[in-house]
Amino acid sequence: MAVEDLVRWVDDFTDLMSEFPVNDFLFMLLPLVCAVVGGFILYHTHTDYWDKPKRYTVPGPKQPEEVKILDDPTLKVSGTTAIQCYNPATGQFLGYVNPSTPAGIDRAIAQAAAAQEKWAKTTFGERRKVLRTMLQYVLDNQELICRVSCQDSGKTMVDAQLGEILVTAEKLQWTIKHGEAALRPSRRPTNLLMAYKRNTVRYEPLGVVAALVSWNYPFHNLMGPVISAIFAGNGVVVKVSEQTCWSAAYYTSVARGALVAHGHDPQLIQTVVCWPQTAAHLTSHPGISHLTFIGSRPVCHQVAQSAAKTLVPVVAELGGKDAAVILDSAAPDLPRIADILMRGTFQASGQNCIGIERVIAAPTIYDDLVSTLAPRVRALRLGPDQDVGAMISGASFARLEGLVRDAVAGGARLLAGGTRHAHPRHGKGFYFAPTLLADVTPDMAIANEECFGPIMTLLRAPSGAAPDLLALANAPAFGLGASVYGRESDPILREVVSRIRAGGVAVNDFATFYAVQLPFGGVGGSGYGRFAGEEGLRGLCNLKSVCEDRVGWLGLRTAIPAPVRYPVGSQEKGWRFTRGVVGLGYALTLREKLGALVDILRNS
Image (cartoon, rainbow, N blue to C red; front, top):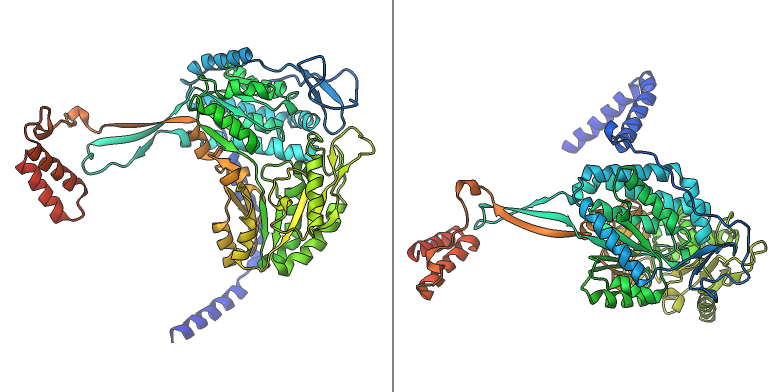
């Protein structure tokens, strides 16, 4: 009867709704939508009048007086210790940068330390003002920042906008809005025995922290550690890569300019560049309290060994072999997914820590995916103003060609690319043809080694079941990021997301966990520790645990009871007394607690 009543009620409600004069209320729809959207935008962009950013100017890097294309673009040249800088997309000479010496590193750390003593006393409000002013500069000068990055790293303007501006603006905005909440002293619970105590964890500056960053995103990789470090009250020294050190002086001035605009010491922020043999002087320096390292596993071993000399904690992000797992239930969404796979693989010419390195597809959709992707990869154009930019150098070309060659010999199908590319207009640029390999198997080297290049590999899962998909996804030693595509209600999607070994997972998307300031890092061969988000900010602090009297002014404080006060009169009586204290605090039943209280009273 109840079911019949429910059916009748639904039918009656449907009839009423069909008679409702919807058209009479349509005029309200547009204003309502505008109000909701406007309110959302206002909430996310509103700033107090007194917190308005200050505008400042910073000259861009000095451009070469004439266009000179190098015959052999390399960092080292005979006759000088200076680093030769060039545009990887064209081979154009950009200038020389003198590397830092150990004495120069000492000065940089000392200057940052001196400035940090005063900066540590600033309020979160003062730090927010600096970051808001910095954000305004980034937004006002997006084109210049992108063009400088393109010159130094060879990427396209679109790749620079996404990988340099968007993520830096997000980090600045997130820290402005949520940084204080992450670092505000947090109250912690107490227990019965310590009910008269108040417990707090304080997040205090460490002093001077350092970051050794990679070359793939020269602006963002420099600014990211700076934003977190200074908001946490630290000074910071960033060692930039010698591959992209031409832009570092300009980007450092961008960060320092926001400090100067608000009357703070710009020496709080330091950057150094040096040859590898000098880097150990920074990583083992007693004036450094924390290290963030972004790079390769072999170099990380050296960094960690060096940092261990002074017991400096290290957060290491070491790249990955990220998998995009396509489930059977994703079939209706395949055209959109193909777009994401293309961007996720070929962004920055594949030189992306969380770039898609492997596409693992259920067998029912594998062939459709291959036929969809093959013509699109073949159609990609190479060049600084085309689809895919240059690689940072030709150092990895032979390795990448060898991986492709070995895969083909093992049965993989090469559907596009596979070799270095001689650009018709930029013969001295470093280009690798966008590559598509199908029928890759998990035993192939290319399925296990990080390519860090424009190479898409497709692996066919034995079935669409979670164990088969996960066996492929979790095969390499890496575990940085991953993405999983399928219907939200698909139980296989939930299982794969839960069991895939990675530091971050994007569901039906690519790398979105990085774009929303979630803690970022990997497991296994991809490193340890996290930066970004609350965890990243707190990792740059001394977590000081403070336990104090809740109402000490009433005289309610810890006093050593007579049975355990030195000299101890009786060990037997003292032991029975302390046993009673433990029972009162931790016994599981009320009867046991009362018995413990009796023990305390008898032996007091």
